[in-house]
Image 1 (tube, rainbow, N blue to C red):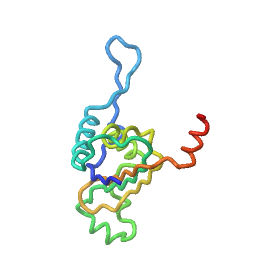
Image 2 (image 1 turned 60 degrees about the vertical axis):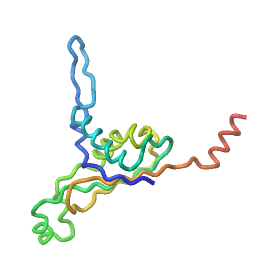
Image 3 (image 1 turned 135 degrees about the vertical axis):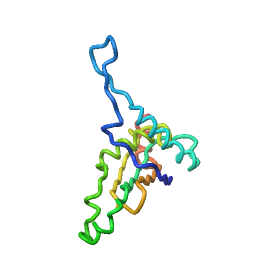
Image 4 (image 1 turned 180 degrees about the vertical axis):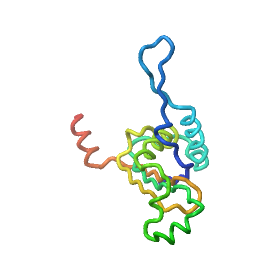
Length: 153
């Protein structure tokens, strides 16, 4: 298993940009400059973790999204001790998942098509905004490999 602490993801709404190139009738969609910068920023912790080549094949990914703790968090906690963090600004989990998987593609994982399980959780803010990602390679079930070999025979 690989554990990475990454910068807080950008919004999926800012990850892609669409434009109509001069002389074309249809818009094309491309990574935004902000998305390219985020992917580059994600690359440093990946390299620091010793990942020199992306994991190929099936993987499971666990994501813990930590929003920025606001300065008035103590007041919010006194007012609503059980759910004060529900009022903290945070990306939607599904929005964060897509951006993270795209940013990890080619760096830590070969392709997001190999992700077989995702567990994502929004955490209580405890300081700086960040995301903790755990990537676990998954082996093919032995029975599936055997069935495949038998089918080839």
